[in-house]
Length: 202
Length: 202
DNA sequence: GGCTCAGTCTACCGCTCGGTACAGAACGTG
DNA sequence: CACGTTCTGTACCGAGCGGTAGACTGAGCC
Image (cartoon, rainbow over all chains, first blue to last red; front, side, top):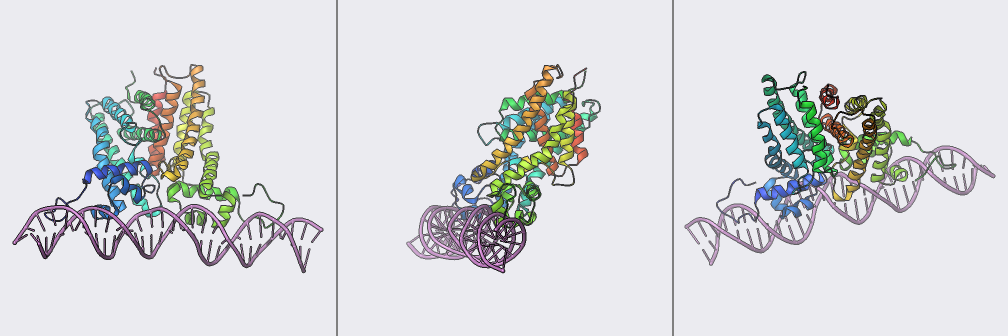
């Protein structure tokens, strides 16, 4: 495994981040266990020894690809949490998630779920990695909504943790729907309904 | 493949429905691709030739096990739709789902999702089977809520299809959470929030 | 008891899996 | 230009996969 650009030797013929994106797409589409090394290498445009020299193992490749997925895709939804009110933050989070889950430039749905909710015992680390990623997003939601609660910006009788879990669960459900072919409009109509729960009752 | 009890020959040493339940549990815990034949046969207490003589192939076994899962588990949530009002039906559906997803007598979560959201290309039929099962449940929800709409039993501006999708998506998200270890109480608190969206605004 | 016939058991099949050895190719440096 | 170093390509490894052949077992029937 080389870090940075080595001073000497034959130069690498591929861009590390670019091939990670291709790898993420294969994992996204077929899941960890459904993504064979042949499928991965051919999508990444490199061959096995290069893959192993660079990333170490299939699992480590997955971990790197998932990290990059988080930086590039999940970060978009997380950015929504900067809105000034809880309602606006939740709306922006759900809407941008729904958009991302159905965007045409990558597989439908979400790598955090398609990657491998359930795996064989020897790949259980993969499910854990994904669960940890989802938990990090939920924890960002909790943090934002806890602030909202302190600001009196949450509906009566609504707890920040529970609301975060609700929002996260809905978004995960949308991912399942998207993977099965639901359209952007389908998901946005579901978001419309969810937002009724977040609005302060008049 | 034998149907019914044959008049002659050595009698089968296992109960077909019982071993299907054990198989469903393995698929549920490890997913279709993560469930090896060795794991299946040892959990079912039969060996390969018996499995193949009875069920035909791993995929057909999965199909039978999933059908039985639907009859025994999903049916519980679907029964909730008989309640007299849309609100009561949705509440009962979400509450009994949340209970089922976290019941201790079987793996956490839902086979319809853990079974294999994303599979390798040669197992894509499995994802389709699961998606069809989920769609059937959603369609039962649509039917119930369409009736509610005709009875004036739906909040203003809420469409039956969208509400069904919202309810179904939330329940699927709860399944993802349950698979990662969420408790019954965690999910019920999320249901509390969801129900605010279904209540008629006063 | 001998016969038929379905079910079970051990042992094996070809194949693909994740992972690697090793030779050759492309660079910077003396 | 030869050298050390690093990456690439082919060809391969043992292991486990899903699936099966064929001998054996145990029930009903005459």
